[in-house]
Length: 483
Image (cartoon, rainbow, N blue to C red):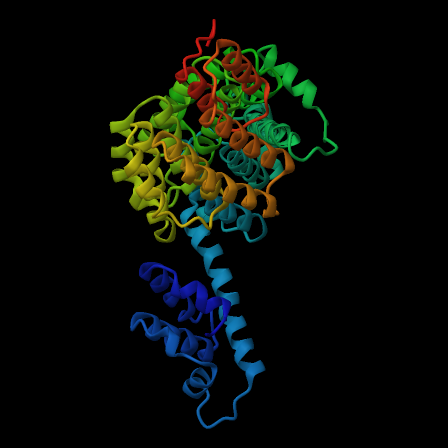
């Protein structure tokens, strides 16, 4: 199998995209090497005929360099040239789609090569683009700053002096600097949030330049009229002040109010902030946050935030179902699986559907069908393995197949002892789950004191599926004073 990077890129690209690249390579302005064009034509023909597997180096060489001895180095160089053209092409694609950047490049060119006859028209066009594509993003303010600065640079010294004297025509320096300040502050706040988020996992020396001063300015109301900066400020406070829930709800309200004013990147970023806060609160057993996460997921689906480039992450798919089931939304969950399974990668779809249908059946107490679906799940993914094995144990318990349950516990322990990719703490949490499930299944006494001790031991233990274990103890007849 050929392993040229450019061939692998092209074979998995859409036809319309390849057609544009083909026009680019065959343009003499961008490419004057006929052999590179021939190589692309050859690749395109084999891709369209769906027989790319038949290609080999010798066949490629024979097609492009007939009657010439094969040279592997020369063929690799030709592929490298085509790859280099592809890299230039994707930059050109981005340039063509970004009217702001195109306008800035045009104005910058005029600084060095003045064409006075079109100067005013280009300036007017750039400002029109700015008003037409206004959005809540740092990039917008950077682009507007670049446009305004180019406009200023293009003006002659004489014009600058003339405008300085005229109160009606002078430059709006406040506007120029406001765009620059907003860009800097937005980026600073966004990266500060990201730094604080990752600090729990990867502590590092922080770059504290102006962090406190900026937060204090926003806190005192200096930038409270700018929803972008205010959103980033609230995002940071959800981490630094998690007990003050107003920060979360204020952020949620702003995101809802200005959702369609944000660019796609900030929409996704801010929803991630909301999810992060809610999940952390739910993990701390804060009241109402499982419901909040479920409603947040529904909102994100309605606003099309979670499907990115036509694909939905299998982890997100799994999480949505998990929180829907915690809220006993069984019919909604089945509709969700039906409606969104096609957004999963082909290689992940069957596993995800079978696994999550098993979870639905378990919550509905349809234990036999749940077990049947789990047996159709390929357990190569460690996350599937952990949850599925845990679920199998409880399914055998519910079906009163205690020998099968013991066998599942033993095989799960062997897996945990052998795995190299889980932390010691996480392994111990699963082992504690198996220990307590075994105790619950083979508890000889229904005495209140025995059940009370088991219940309190589980409450204090570091154990996965704690809520489930406590529920099983209650089902044995224990009635705690407060659940």
